[in-house]
Amino acid sequence: MEHPLTGKAIYLYILIWSLVISVHALLLHQLYSFDFFVCLTDAGLYYIPLAGFGLSLFYIVRYFRASKGYALNHIIAHLLSAFFVAVGVSYVWRQVMHSIYTDESMQAYINSNFTWHAVSGTLLLILLLMFYYLMENTYRLRERENREKSLESLLRDTEMEMLRFQINPHFIFNSLNSISALTMEDPPKAQEMVIRLSEFFRNALGKNREASHSLREELNQIDLYLQIEKVRFGDRLLLVNEIEEKCLDLLVPALILQPIYENAIKYGLYENLEPVEIKTIITCSEAGVTITVSNPYDSMAQVRKGRGIGLKNVRSRLELMFHIPDLVTIARSKDQFTAELYIPQTTHDQNTAD
Amino acid sequence: MIRTLLIDDEDLARSVIKNFLKDYPDVTIVGEAANGFDGLKQIQENAPDLILLDVQMPKLNGFEMLELIDPENRPMVIFCTAFDEYALRAFEQNAVDYLLKPFTRDRLLEAVGRVVQQQSENNAEKKEAVSKTVNELRTAGGPLDRIVVRQGTRIIIIPVDEIDHIQAEDDYVSIHTGGKKYLRQMTMKHLEEALPPDQFARIHRSHIVSVRMIDRLEAYSKDSYLAVLTNGEKLPVSRSGYQTLRGILGF
Image (cartoon, rainbow over all chains, first blue to last red):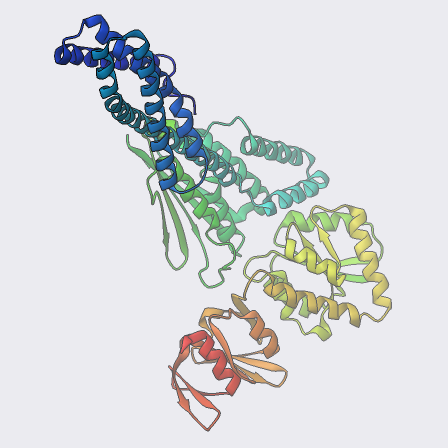
């Protein structure tokens, strides 16, 4: 930490000491009715060196704060340093005053005031030390807060990145296998699939992708994914959509729906022998958009492994972005699985999400 | 001539193999199945020499399907999978043939070629390796969550949550669930290891019980107990079985 009394603060410091000097001088003038110039010399000769040493006391505070040890030792060390500085300055003051004012009455006055100066100087320096402590502590606190904040945002970024890219490797390799088959059977269709897959990955991997985009873009991305699965599974995959047109321009977190559809495909399509219908219903209001995705599933033959990781990711992502829990609700009937997402449309939250 | 059956739930995945094997003189494709059930049926009907088996399939995956085939009559297997770390490690360790999708024609022919060569030799060792791999893999991804059994032509999938208790019967085990009983060729030791350890306890040399079924324990003789199940059945509990129960139930 820098010395707190740098820049403009030093003027304030000088001002305060000047005030002390003036008050002291005025008091002397009142009490002893000395000449005002004498009073000012007296006060100035004492307080100006004290103020100077006072500045350097900060380094003592900083040194002890940085070192480990008992608080009591620190306090004693500080009190002693304040005391010695005050006594030292008082002593010098006495010597100088003696050399200036040589008449006996003044000499007596100076001697009687020596103790008084040492005590008041010590008290003033202790006040100063306390001020330094306060500054040091606020500084440390702020520093820690900043560090925690930046750590938090760093964590959040990594977490977001990890949550965003959770594409099932099965999907990748099986799609490539389908392409391998199509190159022999239906080359134009193979090409179409390669392009679709590229587009899908370009969007999914895009580094400078926005944290949020329109629902229209999100659904386009999902459509790429579903069309690829449709090539693999043909008529077994049926898609039914009920989407309100006006919702399409609303903002949603990028790729937030990907794990939802991956789940629907994994537990619906991959685990069923019959054709499978994946139904999407989207409605919205000013406040937010509700997206419901349902798929049939077999509660009996359900595999336990890995269930719920995708959904958990979606939930954490939404919570990190909007600071509202439970934006994802799950409904399970005997043969139907439904995931419902609510995505708020507060512009403020969208901004803080970036 | 190798009579080959393709089992994969994706049309395109089967068509790759058909295309690759079209001009290969040693192989003839005798059938195609789009799922494990159909695969099982065709294995019985066509008795192929070789199956090319997809691991990931709906309802009955490749490993579960293999479990239902008597090892004596089991055809040779080449596994096909897109991505499965557990499986790959097990295949490698046991030298079981497998193909990683997507694969080249050469890679497929190489695997088939190896099978042709083995067919002329004694391949008991190979079959053993496949059985071992399947056993390993059924539990590799965590405790068992379902058991498939065969009853006549029907295939029944039993979620482990519904099993009441299991009893050893020579080479078989009988799986009791809701008053019904199913036989399957399996060892108690394998089951004991594969079932979720917090739900099942081996209470006796020939008994595994689902702890949710236990109503109370009754002293039977100096060193043994009887477990009385909620449906009234009584099962013997050995001394070490009693200790196992204590560990799970915490009494």
